[in-house]
Length: 549
Image 1 (cartoon, rainbow, N blue to C red):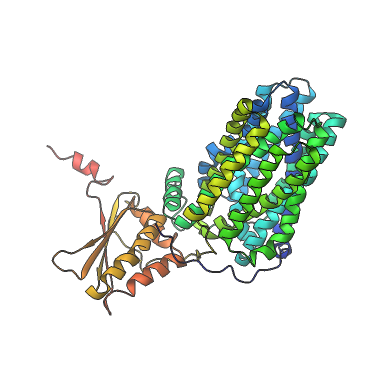
Image 2 (cartoon, rainbow, N blue to C red):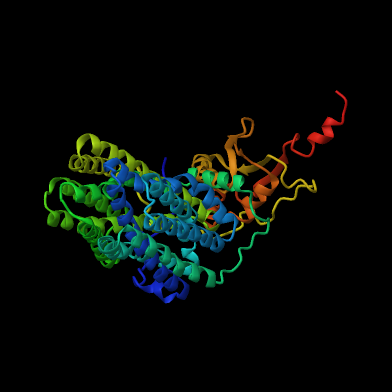
């Protein structure tokens, strides 16, 4: 299936630091830096503590799985809640859960009551909090910066995490050596307080919803329909999942390499993670100029191939210095892949579906990381950790080459600014039945035979547009008695859902696609639209039940 041709160039690149001029973005970025440093300190502490508790390669890898699996399970309903509720309050709730998890770990470890089960359970509680934050945090970025600054904001956020990756693990290793793992857990708990203060002080404008909030079940379904019918977004999600399935093995197995073949202590492991962060900081500096010379597909593919090469080097190089050098390069490739994928997903999603769409992006991303963590941990117990690095590198290289051709990255954003699809919303003369349905919509198009084939082709992306905004069972039919008459039909779950479709969910892209089809119709013709509700819709069933059989 071909992608919709509505991509455009990214345009002139703003300064890499342009988003920092925005006060809320800047304050949140600084608070996130502290929180990310705390998270990386805790990562070192948790993985090292699992080793101290007798865990092998699989158990150490399960620490990563405990972090990411709750996100995998909960991110979709959490994303739907992000589009229904106030995202600011949802973020505050998620940060509080992560604070409680870190504080609980600090308490049980300081008391000497730590076990493998408690370590994994409290880590999983933090993962639950992350599930409620991860999509909403990405979704609010377009509210904090201009549309043109979104790629730079994504890069700065990636750099944020990787500056923390550079400093946090080294600090975590030093803290473990000086005061034990509980010190890393305690500092991580404190690090969440800055984010909570910034979010509490942020005066976010209320979201205007003329038709009220959606039910979470309907919101989840609408998000799934959107993702299924957005091939450009699907390519981004697909590339993300393939990358993380293989690349995530490095984060799960690196502590085992440090303790085993390299013979390092906690401080040495922290320095290895710091090498990744150093490379990521270099990537944040170099990437803006690289974007100006390379197409997105080439940039992402090249960075993935480089990352695969560094994974192979980690498995083959026997010295800590060589592994550290490879990790610097891997950090550069990592930030190039993740910032580009994240920015692409953000600019491809309209405001009404941004959080739930990003939730599916994170579902695949975190799912690949969780499955990769436990899967490569099991393989390492079987083949050995160094061989596993080489095997996962080969798998990443192969899937990257295949993905470059089958899932090409979009070359730029699409115009997803809101736009009402039809000038006059339909009026169904059945008061009090807004939730009744389904509703059948028919549109009659008059097309001269000379334009018929072009019209049929132009209506395919229109059908995708209808599905993205809420339709199902879309079809285009040609009148057998009158070949100039085409009938478009689609169903929507209820009248309220159809009103959302045309009043809240339309974009400039949807308007453009319909305009292309309209340009091929008979001059002066206006499509004839009809709205029909299911005769046995809820509300009439009670009326029918009063009649005798």
